[in-house]
Amino acid sequence: MAVCPHEWLLYCRPGFEKDLSAELADKTAHAGQGGYPIAARDSGHVRFVLDPETPANEVHRALPLEALVFARQSLVAFPPLEALPRDDRLSAIVDLVVASGWSFESIWQETPDTNEEKALAGLMKALRKPLESTLKKRGALRRKAGGRRLHLFWTAGDRVQLAMSFPGNRAEHLGGIPRLKFPREAPSRSTLKLEEAWHVFVPREAWPARLSDSMQAADLGAAPGGWTYQLVRKGMYVYAIDNGPMDDALMASGQVEHLREDGFVWQPPMRLDWLVCDIVDKPMRVIDMVERWLVAPWCHEAIFNLKLPMKKRWDEVSRCLERLASSLDQAGIRARIRCRHLYHDREEVTVHVCLLD
Image 1: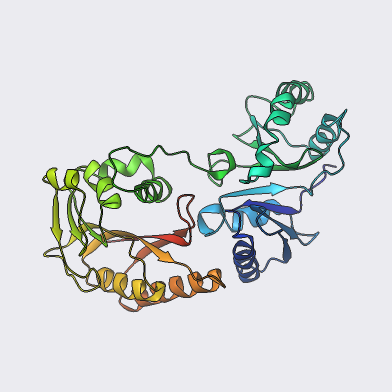
Image 2: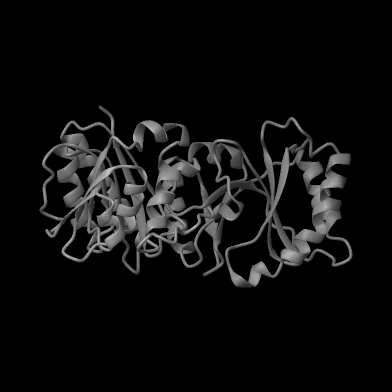
């Protein structure tokens, strides 16, 4: 009989392990699943150890990656293999794969997003070909295996954790990190936050219908125009609301109307397609403002950031999301709400709301 994994391995931004652990503990408890997190500060990952009678793939399906805020990647895993001998790291890895009965179409070797672990690149490169060759011979690595992927998560030269991911419930980037190129003409690096948000929240096949040049948008707290730049690049007409100056090139596009007004009180002249907002303020004050827009309703979709407190970040995020969902429900507004701590976020999370007309 194949051995069964009983761990859930999740990647996160270093420094947010405690926040991810709190989220996992809260959500597994609500789902009726038992377990506990193991996380070291600034390690960039959390191991969630499940009750022995609970298969990891059961929790993995019940709490998919898209429903988690602080996780970059979500994997079904075995406990780490430790004290691997320098002259034979492969045997223990291959033995565990064979014992698991796993089969997969590809192998990814990864490390936490820290400078120390990046030094393991040479080891992973040296192991790649012999590992692939051996697992092909043992029948584990094969062409038709349902898109499953084996992950080798190295945290030291003699310590690796074996995990599996499944199509539709994983990040499709190494380490869960999207590699977006900063446009030279963009007025600020914050532009990458909105671009990443679209990749995460809007399916690529829906971009022509939901991010088109016939649309109008508002950018609250726009200056100097990092998020406005993304809207203009999609061909939208943008109301840029900010008392500060906007980028000259954006204003020369003819697609931006700059209004020196307070983003918390400004009202659009008509219902717009998009509201975006990267205002630095108390999270609940931003929620109050977004609620007003959505209940009116003054937009079809919204993407906005919530700046996080230094402590109890998950508690604050949970409180804000519950308040928003409750307010929309009371107003009879049907909506899909998602929230993620994106790679290009720092001390904030990004929320997406799509009204379901």
